[in-house]
Length: 298
Image (cartoon, rainbow, N blue to C red):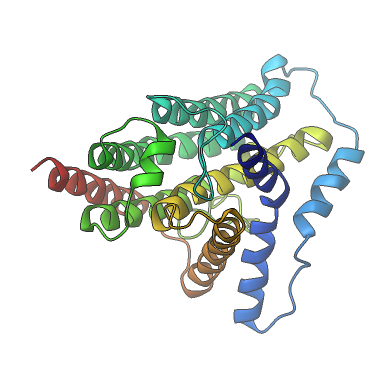
């Protein structure tokens, strides 16, 4: 069991940045371009780690704490979410509540670091980030509550190991979690990670003043967050169906890469939504989760 837990953690820590590479290469293939190398995210993180950090004389300790706390929270979330049909490193009754809180902690310190710069531009991005989060979190919590009620447990490890996507309620939850995945990871249609237009930047604008190792921590933390939220979706789609550990690992990694390809296809086929349309899509995700919960308790 300890070997399986260590393997899951190692997979997340090593392969998380590869998801963005798969997404970018998928988008490039659809557009008929060669695209960036698959390992470009690793190169960027390594490059920023070698640089020096620049701090404003008016910034406080909050500015420096934001990237560190964000990365620590992402690692903590990785330890809570199970993968490939085995238990998580931190598994206990009610750990789904801690999972939601550590994600909220990362966002809280990222927003504080953005506001600490005193820039109205970064304050705008922080305001939009919190606005989107306030709409996405009910969908996530209601979806987790549905799975908990369906499986009769409050532990993510037991919830995901006994969940079955054949249930219509969990299909609705998967749809809601898919929308939350795109929102929480700042992907189209909620945000465009490649944009350079001031009025459309949301997450990227909050970290404009970070540089060097701090920015590397932000990039790596964002990759881990995408891996963790993807693990929730894949875990419900592929519960423990085999006693063969290598087979489960291969299916899990393949499903994670397939999820990245799906995100790339979505971003290739649609544009970013207008800001006024975003609440409607997130409200739809919350409605799916709530309706699924109603079906479970009926």
